[in-house]
Length: 171
Image 1: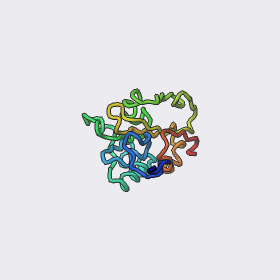
Image 2: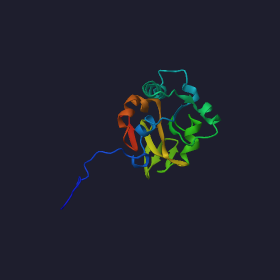
Image 3: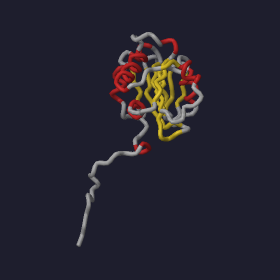
């Protein structure tokens, strides 16, 4: 007698948190997430960072907070983070950059991610990684090198399953 139960492993199953690659969607779907925007853009719904933050917040129930508010929180364990804005715009982005894997280095005129450098004001970056202190959660950064790099920022959400994406002129 031979019994073969799904030898090609086609039975759908729920993936564990650590089995899902780090990505924006992991942050968006997290029950415990913080969406952190630069303090300078709070109260400006036309700002590309606020548009993304509000869109996620309205659909998934988490309102954005400023980087100044977020810095006052003592503990980020047990939370996924979406950090919007360059390190010179968002103090939380600056603080987390040194902890990320793959390493991300922001330069005056661009950035380096996964060993590749992108220079120019028309570049933006969406990168996600496991939270260094809690591998059950994800940290995602999204920033543009200039306002022009964010002209199509609302489309960044369509790349929610990617661990990192470099956009040039919003594409």
